[in-house]
Length: 429
Image (tube, rainbow, N blue to C red; front, side, top):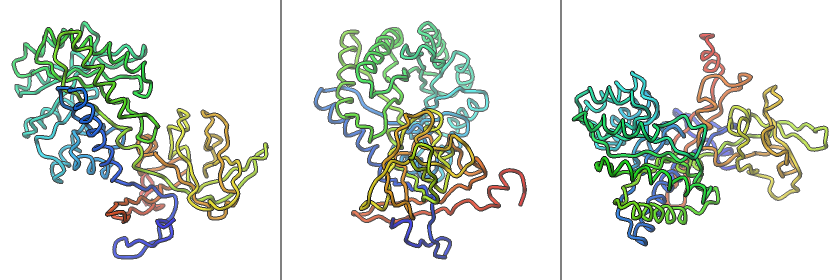
């Protein structure tokens, strides 16, 4: 409530923040990054794992400037997904967040513009660009560039029968042979993105074992291969998963398989998106109206759209932590939430979820509702800036830093104006 009730200085004037409000806490990004390394170092020491760990920030989870700035300043490698990601790398260099030696992992389908941009980036002196090839055709522009690259190959995993990504086991050998014959490319990385979540335990470890055995087969034929990139798959920090135990079991699995296969345990890469960014952000709304449902459960209507703000809830049925910010001292009653759009589906719990009402304060007067752990994917899937469903404006954004236990607002962006929304629709106001 302090954020909402305390005036902030913006462009030399005091302004009263209003809901809807998107709040970021960068310290959680830094803490998640540090903690992943700490779990690795602890497990590495306990079981004497010989390899290293690189943690890459998967920008697709949240490519916004405050997130990229924080994680790159913390030391994360950067994982690209598309051509415009390369421009973020250049911006990061210009801002001093990275040097030209920072590892840049280039995933995604490398259409000609993307491939050319990566080659230009290498020519500009970025020494550690790692293109990870998804099909055989992607190799040629890099082989013909004459520039030296360490490269990777993405394997098609068995964990999802509908998987469209990666090379078949046979094509992995064809690609590795083409790379070896190029003279300027050096195969170092085997990318086996596990399509099973790490929270699945035995199912995840079984999928990992299959990938490791294929890595071993390729390594014996092409011994320059020394990195195993198992992609992402880590849930958010607050998911309840025991990450320390997962890290220990994963390193044990890798060491055991490599010993059976008679090869060295590889250096490791984690491309983390959801784990790093999910819990750094929350959205706050004010209840502006109540409507009684036919079953006697009230709808609390909030001053925003659930569909636009949380597309994973609307489209996939994913849930978020939803809590009241105030009125904790009173009675709690079953409630559903509804957005201000005229859309039947703009409700929470959504149509994709079990219809179990939330328990929220009966006193809805000036009630503030928070959706927590929404810092991964929602921002870009729902669209940033521009126009939203029913032409509802985007709310304000606040960045909160922590210093010796005290919280300070360091950045503030006001809500969209009518002119900004309508201009994005071509009205030219």
